Length: 184
Ligand code: ZN
Image (cartoon, rainbow, N blue to C red):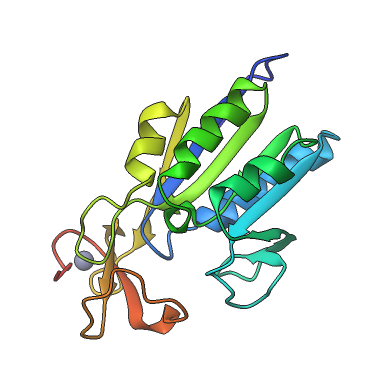
């Protein structure tokens, strides 16, 4: 994605898709480019997600970048004051408050890059990502590869029986699936 480097105006970018689609990788890539451009960057991730590392955002392909763990959206707002470019990973765990926080930060002239799951394991839109898509200037939907047939995949298949919407630390219990192979 090519974002025109605007002066004095902020905006929101959303990177969404199913699990294993490279959302975090794309978030890290954008933050690294901002660092090369000597912009002040910061990355947040919800505390609920402590896989791999406590203070780094790590993609499935083992790319990593220093991050700050936050308990809620308010902490993002408080700690993003001095940053020009703000990355937020796993936005689906930060509740609907993150929508207003992203708006406030973008209105302050900051570039806000948010990554998150757009659908839950039933294929249902996973708030707050749909709301973030509505207010964002730039949207990227990443697709994974269906583990059954090899087609582009946008669904997250849960492989065990559980009614909980969030199963943390259960990475190996999910697969990317295409529309045809997805079994909610
Ligand atoms: Zn398939």
